[in-house]
Length: 454
Image 1 (tube, rainbow, N blue to C red):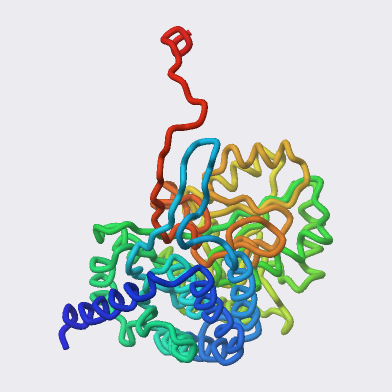
Image 2: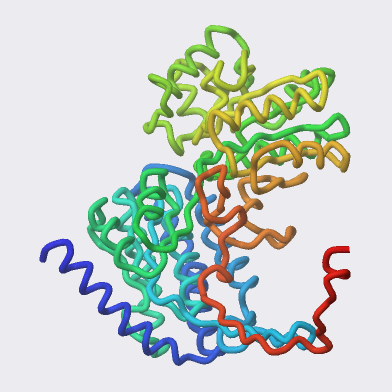
């Protein structure tokens, strides 16, 4: 079967399923969405094991936590929320809002998150009474397909329409592009090439930008609590999450104290010129992130650089000679490596973060460890990112958690800075249309010209 014919068949299946599903009540829709999350939650160990073995990236235990954690938090956030029929009646404005499906969602999913991203996208799509066609990364097609297979088995048992969730079993760039052009709305949670393909498909699209989370440490920070959180975020799943902390930008007067705290918590400090150069060459041959080190452990990265580290090393902390365009360490490092910088003033620290973001990561996120509201808002007013996470492990909380109010998701919009259509976390609220009934606003009058212009 040729590519276009294959995609046409998937699309026909999806439209038929969506037409039947559109008649579901809110209670029925929520029952379907719950099944998606609960399936991944119940099979977290199996799917984590498959993902690590197939992709060769990440940490089994962390992927289990991710599968269970994302299933919990995403379902908990959306359960019982309105996405069918009348959303609200506003007597003050005279506006009534009614939810309508978008149709068929096409979703490109990454090899770095091959389980929870298909789960999340399917939950968002079906919450809005849409169908979805998933285009997995070729390096994770088996585990992503198994995820969809398990979900569909449970949906079938529950009597849901067949083909609400479909996945391309033998993915390719050509097939993904055809899905993007044929569906009604696109989600691209992958590399920038596929994000651009989604935006050029002629259909409404939601994409992501590159991560490069700058971590600013304030003078007032409690390093005994901040440093373990930074390490936790950088180490999680061997650093493949786009929200993982990439730098530690600390006040010069507390820099050595910070380094000592990192060492106490399992970091190896790379400080000699020779080791710094070897690590840079290993991570960025020809200035590009070494794909063979993506998602590898700190020990494996050190070995590739010819650096001997203790067996229990969790992350590599690098004394970085320069920032911004002057050093490759300013870029995103998709493994447990943190670039360390010292600043003499908060303004200088923010300038270091800004310069690094100009190299890579504009629009994504910044992590701040401080309680000084004035300095926090100074940074937030200058740095071109969509999210500022305070006093938390960024990698595991930036996509929403039980302890902050960011929308629970696996797709983080980066606004115009990252060539994205939204500057917030993608959520289920983005995947249905809203019709508005506009009545005459109670008590409304036409103001006089004097009132308008005066």
